[in-house]
Image (tube, rainbow, N blue to C red; front, side, top):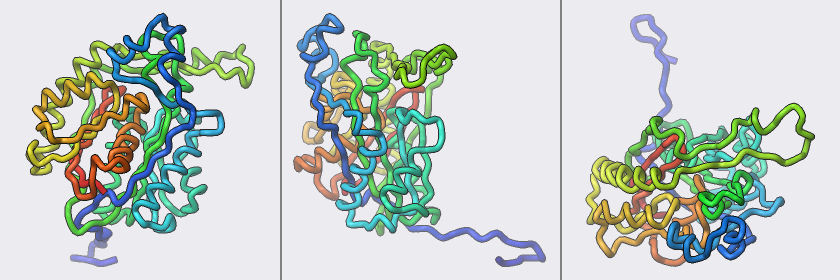
Length: 343
């Protein structure tokens, strides 16, 4: 505590000059659901699904593969990649919309299972944009001195909320988890975030039923009835394909990076047609590697970007030190984008 002119001066913690992603990890459920397993219920075909979305298969979690279990597995892989002991983690941020308890936050249970009980831990709900929101928060908190090392997790069990008879969404959603360790850096490793929302489009992607409509007073405990997700595909395609290209350019501009400096493009794995349309609108150079994890994984909402980036690193299409653009958008409509250095 210090005083100036008799006034108590509140001190501020000193942070780090820069932050970066130090490691990344993922968890993919073991159960693979090919299009052939879905088509009869929605009167469709494998060809139609691939043409509309680019998805060949998706992964759905077993009862044992909970939000917490998948998050812990992905986090341990990220910590191993970063070479960081879990006891160094003092912040855990979990981006999810499929933790079925309103409270407490699943982040606290994940932190406990990992062995970092003293860490600050909280959930954020920004749907598919949640992971990019988490990276932005972690970067600012590390640079501001509120955290030394942060763990950012994107995790979903969207199969719990999928209406398997809905022709517009039954083939889209999937499950999985991805995690990243964010820590101090001598150079800029995470650029300024460009984020926002367009509440006028609130109804384009949403939970169809209010919880009160699903959990009625006459429902028997344990009946397992859950609300479903609904999406207006064509308006979402038009909005994301063109609006997000502008957001991507803003993120590049704020980071002082040109489109020609990019090595890797990791958009939210919403739909292959959206990914291709964004790449065309942005005029991405052909040499830029584009994440296309959706073909094998499906749309995992907040988990899609870390899952996709981890696969690219494992396959060698993204290398340590590469300049990558992350961009995500989803229900709300909420969105976020930032330029990062690949760990």
